[in-house]
Length: 236
Image (cartoon, rainbow, N blue to C red; front, side, top):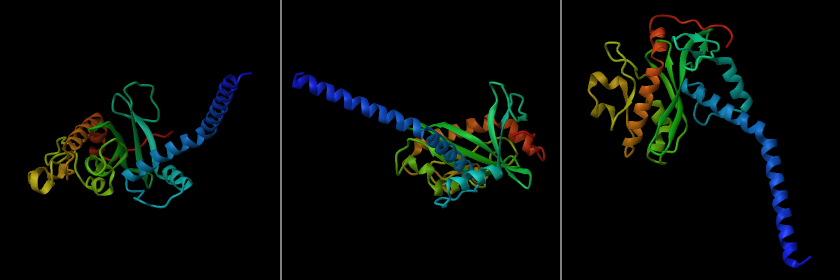
């Protein structure tokens, strides 16, 4: 066999071995990867209701246990009813923070357009159906130091206590101001806005639109909670 053929055969053998090793590693790590994805989702749901603090040391097992003890997930069907499971194509996923066997907050998935890609997170609303309990972001492509600030604790904390209805009780959502709320928003509307991020006007605009769309989608659930105490169905 010529030296050239030997080189080709050796290269092919190395490529085959590397391919088999990579395939084996991917297969062997698949379960761990899926678990990490699930735990990250659980951690961000917990963040949205203030049960997981920034830089809080917690093991995977501790996060899973806290989630299991406090969070229940259901669906909201096309008629706006909370159901344990639904084949309805229009059903919306929703989770609840359960405290003393009653829902203390409901948690909505946020999927919004951003400046450079999609923004994904969770927004929690207290059981009064109008007050924001918290907000978390787990995935985005915004510019670090600008739009990327949406994932930082200082920005997310601004949402706590904000209202999704106005003073008359009409739907108003939660918007991101173009500057400091106290300086650019009228006093009677400040409860519906959070401070914006300097140099990230477009990120704020896109996220404002995304939050409004999500809150509108779950409007029936908000009205249900505003009408009185809500009981969750069995079988979550």
